[in-house]
Amino acid sequence: MTSTLMTITPSLSGFFYSLLFGALVLGALGAGFIILSQRDKVVRR
Image 1: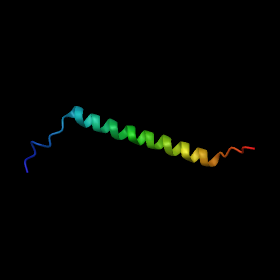
Image 2: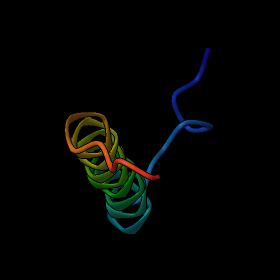
Image 3: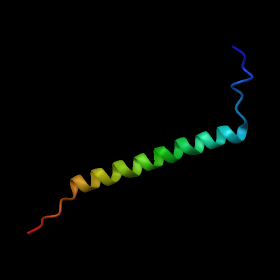
Image 4: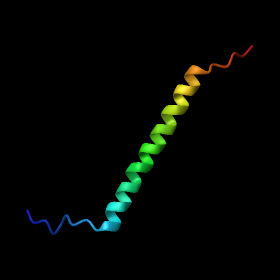
């Protein structure tokens, strides 16, 4: 298998890293909202 097919340019690797860190930040925010909503129950009458 030649490595010429799998060459990643620096801009492409930066794009993948930005996608990865964006997903991590969104996941952390989502987990924080879920934990907060589970802890802070609103009593409705």
